[in-house]
Length: 588
Image (cartoon, rainbow, N blue to C red):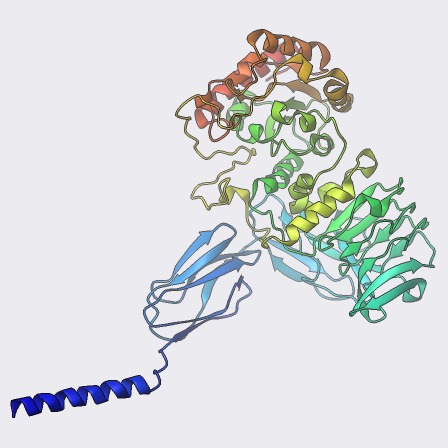
């Protein structure tokens, strides 16, 4: 009997197992989470579905003028991550809608369409001294017209501000419209739903290219389309993506306006346009370099503008300057001068940067140069060519570019094309992000990484040893700096400052004393110092040998000083500046 019951039990189990194998699996229970829409942010995805007990994570990007503060879900964690936020909802066990809470900034800009509409109040995040305006497509539309920018006066007679460029908080801005030329003036082709302009039979000094022709968006200008055109001002639409080589050859254009969603352009497109002086870039896309060291240039320039009527000491070099000074100590030691650290990046041409700085200096101001020898070609202004890094530096305020005379430079549009192609593949960020919120690697920080002067101030420990980091020795010899190639172009730029009444001084950029070439003997270094003192038209404040420090005073590179290195170097510079000022009978 026992064996029979056991056999029957086994048979029942087999039947049950067979039934489980044959029956379709029951669908897994899922919890669905939906983020409620809000003007305060955009989300990479608004919904998520997970099995009970899992954690749900959303990636959020705050809108300008908003700070995200939390979410109405038990245990929700909101973490700042670079230019956005990560929202984590732990152990989700039920479906629900989640609202993200946010604070609206008290800082605003006011806009009017200049067509009879009412004022629009737009909050902006006060993360910079000046704030960025709305970009193309955010606020207004006027068919048959191109929005060329903003102005503080309805008729355009006030302060002009480009789309996405910077203005004072609280500004009242009127839209500026340009009527597009009649479509009958153009020849064009339409393929795959897009138009290519092939010719222009119009006249007049102003050309405003329509954004549509033949019912299709204008995306390309073909070679020869505007050869020898007599127009002096050209405004291109935000639909445009490609300008082919030869498109504007020999054109009389003096001022050009375009948008940063253009994808392809080079110098060949504007070959022979010898009168082209001004380039206006309007933002049609979100910035991609916000929070990076590139973006510090606009912030530093904001400080420079804020001190227009104040006597200033401007520090200029590349990253060795932004890592190399204690500007607060300089400010305290030299109370007659407000300090601005304009150092950003050495491996881009210093010439346009210096010209932008010069435009904001006045008689009696001081410019302290500290050229980096491993980037000497760019630091000594040996070329007038633009590069894409310079466009990265003005992305936060394209209006800086518009103040430069393009006739002084080469390679402008090829550099612009390279910049535009690179940024097209990068993730969008927000003007609201300040570089002070992130470290050099783009990680969020609890304390500001930059101070108001423009110094990078996060603590940097001394190196464990004096050994160079890169193993790329720099040549500190006279032969490495021929007069015609380095000294003459540097003197030409220095002369522009001195003609404006600005005193130009020089102190050598710091470097690991072991990161120099074998030919850079003590005798060669002394000879190079003497050579610069004899030939450069700037007073040199400190001996070259004093700039070569033990490697322990550097952090991560051979020319970025540690925090202790900054204190040591700043003390040297303060002593030298005080001596130089007293020698000239000036009050420090």
